[in-house]
Image (cartoon, rainbow over all chains, first blue to last red; front, top):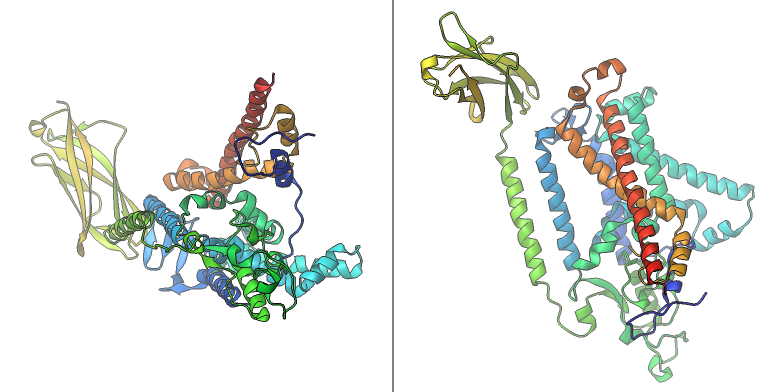
Length: 471
Length: 104
C-alpha cells in the first residue's frame, strides 16, 4: 500500500500510514530495568509515603470513631471533627476544583511531577514492579523467563507472582471499601466470613482494577487512558521544568573506551549505552526529545548520571531543566500563567476555608401539610399545619427554640415542649400556626420560622413558608 | 484523539485504519470515559436523593443503601457507555463518509 502524502510539513516525517501502524501495533512488553540514585530514592519515598497513608488512614481513630469515614450506608461523612452530609456536596465539588487547579499550577511550574511521583497509577505500578522483581528476578531474568517454554518452574514462579499480586490487590480493595464502611466491622466480618454482598463485590471490583491496572496495563494507562497525559502540554511553556537530554552536549553520540578523549574522537558525551531507554517504564528514548509518553519519572536521569560518573564526565547529560535553560536563556518562575493559577487557587481556597468555618451545623426544612390549605378553628382563627424537619449536623445533642413571625399576633402550637435533637439526627416536628383573619393581607402570606439552639445563639437557621387563608 | 483521527487519510487507508483499531482500544475508548462520568453522575444523583426515600419499600426487597448505590452506578455506567458507543460509531462512520466524498 502506498503511503499518502503528508501535507504542509517541510521536515521529512513519518507518513500517516506508518504512524497509524506504530500507534495501533500490538506493543511489546516493556521490562523496565531497576535503577538506583537520588531520584529513585525520592520516588521510593513517594511510593512508601503515599501507600502508607492509603493503607493506614482508615484504621486511625478520632474520639472513639474512625477518623476518616465516608459512611455511605449511613449517608454521613466523618472527617476528623467534621461531619458532612449529602447536602454539603458543594464542599466536595469545591475540593475537587481546588485539586484540579493545584494540578494545573504544579504542572505549569514543575511539569509532570505528579505523574512521576504521586499518581496512583505510578505508585501501584512501582509496588507491583517491586514484587515482580523480588519473585522473577531482574530485567534479564524476566525476559528469559518469558521467552522460555512453559515448564514446571515457570508455572511455579508465575503462579507465585500472580498470587502475591492478587493478595495485595484484594487488600487494596478491602482498604478502599474501609473508607466507606467502618473498617473495623468490615475486618471482623471478613474474619467471620460474614461480609455483605455489596461490600464483597466492591472489594473484588477494586482489587481487580488494581491488579489489572498495576499488573497488566501499567504504562498503557498513561498512554491510552489518562486524560491528563493528553492535555498537560497545554499547561507547559518554555519555563516549565522538564526532563531533557542535552543534545548539544551529547551529540554526536557513540560508544568509546573510557580512555578515549571524546573531543579528539569528535564525539559528544553520550556513549550510546541505551541505559536511559532500558530503565524507561514507558519504553521511550528521551534522546528523541520531549514526548507525551514521558511521565517524568526521572529514572533516565539516575541511569545516565551513574554512567557519566563511571566515564568521569560531568553529571546532568539528562537532567531536570527548562526549554529556555537548554537554549541558554533565563528561566522565569514568576510568569502570567503562574500568577493567574495562584490567584485562582488562593481565592477559591480562602472561600472554601471561610465557608467551612462559617458552616452552621443545623438544617431546617419546612413542609406544608398537603391535605388541606387551611382550617378555621372554633375561635374563628385560621390554622395552617406544617411539618418541620430539624437536622442536627453537630456531633452533640442540642435543645432548640422555635420562633415564628410574619403576621401580627401569629400563634405557634407544637406537641413537644422542648425541641431536642440528638447529634447527627433528624427530627420531624408537626407544628400548627394560627392567625386572625383580619391580620391576613393576602390569600398567601409569608411566615418565617427561626430555630435557635438554646446553648449557642450562633447555631440558628431560618426558613420561609407560606401561610394560606380565605382572603 | 489520535487513535480515531483519519482526516488526512483517503478512504482506503481510513477503512484499513478503522479495522486496525484494536477491539481493546475501542472498548477502552467507550468504557473508560463513561466509567468516570458514571462516578460523577452517581455522586450527584445520590447526594440529592436518598435511596431510602426513593424506594420506601426497599426494606422488603432486602437491598441496602450500598446495594442501591451499586446498582445506580452500573445503571449510569450502562447509559453513559451506550452514549459512548454512539459517539464512537458516528465518529468512525462520519469520517469514512467524509473521505468517500473527497474521492474523485
